[in-house]
Length: 286
Image (cartoon, rainbow, N blue to C red; front, side, top):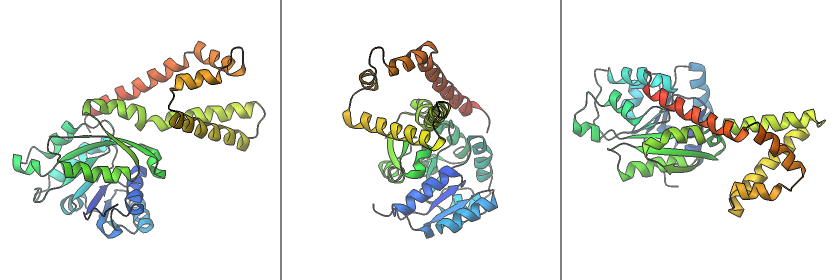
C-alpha cells in the first residue's frame, strides 16, 4: 500500500487503538515518526510508544491541533468530556483540513458534530469531516470487520484514507448511519458471542471426559472449518446445518435441545439488546 503521508494521532491507546497502530505500521501506511498517541494512563502510553516506536503526547489538544487524521479511540462515556476539553481551548480553530475518525460505540455523527462544530463557521466545518467506525477485536490479528458511516463534509479522499487504514486490519463496509447500531450489535459485539459459544463447547467436552486441551482443539478446529465451509461453498447456514443433521442422529438430538430451549431466539434477543444499548449510548450524556 502507498504511504498515507499524514500525521496520525490517537486519543486513547487501548486494545483497539493498538490494533489500528499495529496494522498501520505492518502495512507500511505510515512511518512510526508520523504516529502520535496520548492516553491518561502513563504506563500504558509508555508501553505502546516503546513497543511500536511511535511518539507520545500528553496534551490531547496539541495532538488534535497537529495531526491531519485524529482517531478517537476512547470509551463512549469519555467522548463528551474529551471533545469539550479540546473545543474549550482558546486556540481551537481549524486551519488545515483534518479528518476525525471515531470508534466509540453508539456515539453518533450528530453528537460528535454537536461537540466539535458549534464554534466553527461553515467553511471550517467543511475542513473537519467526521467518519464513524465500528471495528471489532479480530482486528488485533488483521481479521477484523469494520462498518463505517460518514457525515456530510466527507469527500472521496477522506473515504479512501479511512478505507486504507481499516482494510489494513480486515474488511470494511460502508453503511448509512441508521444501520450502525445494528453493525455494533452484530459484528462489533459479535466476537464475544463466538467466544461464549466456544467456552460452552469446551466446557461440554470437559464434562464428557475430554482433557481441556483436546476439548479446545476439537472446538477451535471445528469452528474454523465451519467458517471456511460457509465461505467457500457459498451455501446458506441453514442448508449446511441440514446436511449435517441426519434424522434420528446425534446432531438432531443436540439441535432439538437447542430448539426446545429457544437458543436461536435468545441469540436474536441478545443482539437486539446490544443494538438497544448502542442507541442508549448515543442519547446519554458523555
